[in-house]
Image 1: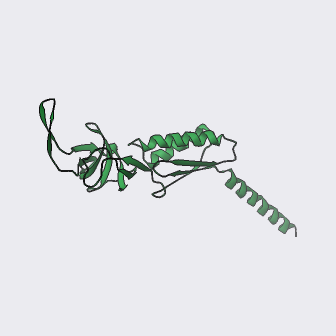
Image 2: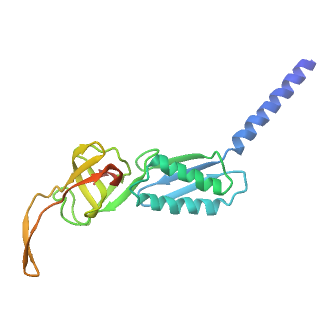
Image 3: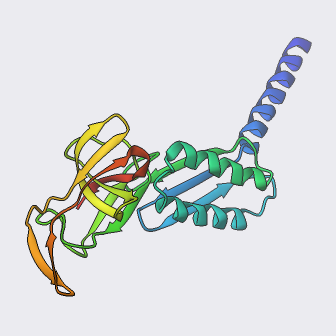
Length: 200
């Protein structure tokens, strides 16, 4: 009888420990749809979750405009932000309109260089990824042209050759000088790729 009582007592302590450990864990659930961010933080620590969620939202908006951040660096920075609120070993869950651990971004096409595929003013859904292949349409930050949306024409290691779909050549007089207007053809580094267009 005494053994049963001791065993029952040990089982109760074990269940209390497991329950406390489970409840003591903090988690941050983030949902991104390309334009909007929703953050919910669960913790028993007493941290200011409203301020934490707001800071994570602001950071996520910045990430959507930054070509260098991927899901790994994104989650790492979220962990750092949580540490500032005395939350360590936080479980970070990122879900989005295109799946788990993906960062979608909505981008507006500016110009006619991707006609007939993309129209001027059209919005496209971009997956923030550096996983690009020949034939993909990507957004990139070019030193020469600034922010562009172009098709991947070639991949040479970390160098990506981008071209316009619009092959039409036109001529225009500007201040009395005749200029040839044609689509872009340029090389960028893989780190300049902001993401791959997945829906248009």
